[in-house]
Image (cartoon, rainbow, N blue to C red):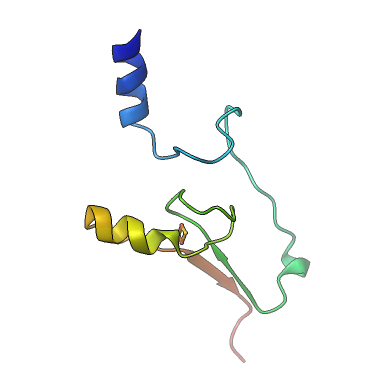
Length: 76
Ligand code: FES
């Protein structure tokens, strides 16, 4: 069982966020985004679903290059 568990965990991207759920889904109302919102794509943020900069240390440790998606209003 430990081997299966380890194999599953090794393939997982999410090691932190709401592990008690089958699927993590978040809804953000567009109207609530005043200027812009940076959404985490590295699954390391402690302010999920928003980016808190944790991707920086992840990238340093793993030589990865992930970062947030920034949702913003169209530039006029
Ligand atoms: Fe995850 Fe920034 S903390 S993308």
